Image 1 (cartoon, protein in one colour):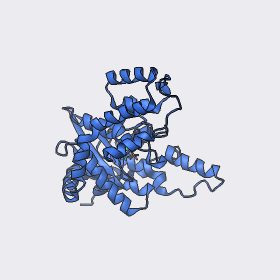
Image 2 (tube, helix red, strand yellow; image 1 turned 90 degrees about the vertical axis):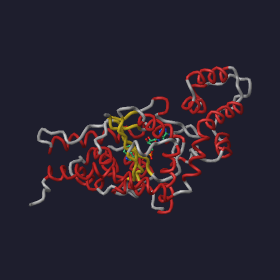
Image 3 (cartoon, helix red, strand yellow; image 1 turned 30 degrees about the horizontal axis):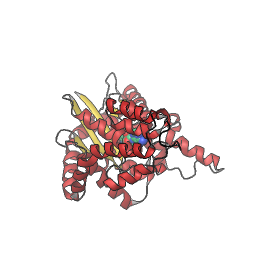
Image 4 (cartoon, rainbow, N blue to C red; image 1 turned 120 degrees about the vertical axis):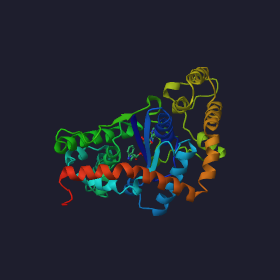
Length: 336
Ligand code: TYM
C-alpha cells in the first residue's frame, strides 16, 4: 500500500488554491486501490498564525465540512484533527531534539519574516514566535507519525516536506540501530496547479487577500471572478494567454480540450468579460454540487464531530504504539 497524507491549516475559509493544490489531488489519490490515506485539519499549526480563537474554531468546522463536501470518504481514509492526537506534539519534541537549528534557520516562512523586519529597520526577530520558527518540526511530526510515502501539496510546501525527510533521516540514523523507524516522505505536486494564482496574479493566499472562496454562493463566485485583474486589451484584440492568470486559473479546472479551445479563443480576441463568464461556468459546474453538500454539512457540527472523533481513534491506533517504540528508542523505557 501507499500511504498518502496531507493537511490544511485552519486559519480561514478554504479557497480555490487549497482545493486545486491539495484537496482535489488528495481525494483522487485516496481512491486508488492500494491507497491508505491520512487527511487532517492542521489546527495546531493554525495557532502559529492566528490568535483569534473564534476564527480558528469556525475555520476548523469549515475545513472539515469542505473535505467531506468535496467527496472524501471518511470510512475509507483516516480523517482527523491534529489537536486530537496528543502523540503528535510529543513526537514533535523528540524531533525538535534532533532537528538542526541551521536547517530551521533556512525555512522560507521564517526567513521571509526576518527579511521583512530587517527591511523595516526593526529587530530581526520582532514579532516572530517560537511556534513560527519550529513550524516545520511540527509538520515533520504530522508526516512521520504515519510513515507517509506521499504528501500531495502546493509548491509552497515542498521545502517543509524536504525538511521532514531530513529530520526523519537524522532520527533514523541516531536511534534506528539499523532499523528505519521513519519512512522518508515525498511531496507530490500537480504541475498545472502547483501555484494557483489569485485575483491579482500573485499566489492565491489568505495572507494576500486575493482568494476566491471555494464555497461562496454562485453570485459571490461571479463577483470574485469579475475582480480578476486583466490587461487593458479591448474586445477583438488578441490576448496573450501565457501572461494572463485568468488563463492559468481556467486551465487548472478544464480538460485539455477545453484549455486548447479557450486559448484559441483568447488569441482570436475573446473579450475579457466573455472570458470571465466562461471561467465562471467552468467553476460553477465543478463546484455546484459540492457547494450544496457543504451547506448541509456546515449546519451539522455534531455530525462532523462524530466523524472526526472516529478518525482520531483510528489514527491513534497507529500513533500510540508507534510512539511507544520511539520513546524506547530514545531511552524513555518503562522500568518494569
Ligand atoms: P495551507 O493551509 O497553507 O494550505 C493547504 C494546502 O493548499 C495548498 N495551497 C495551494 N496550492 C496551489 N496554489 C495555491 N495558491 C495554494 N495555496 C495553498 C498548500 O500548498 C497546501 O498543500 N503547513 C501546511 C499544512 C500542513 C501540512 C502538514 C501539509 C500541516 N502539516 C503535513 C502536508 C503535510 C499549510 O499551512 O498549508
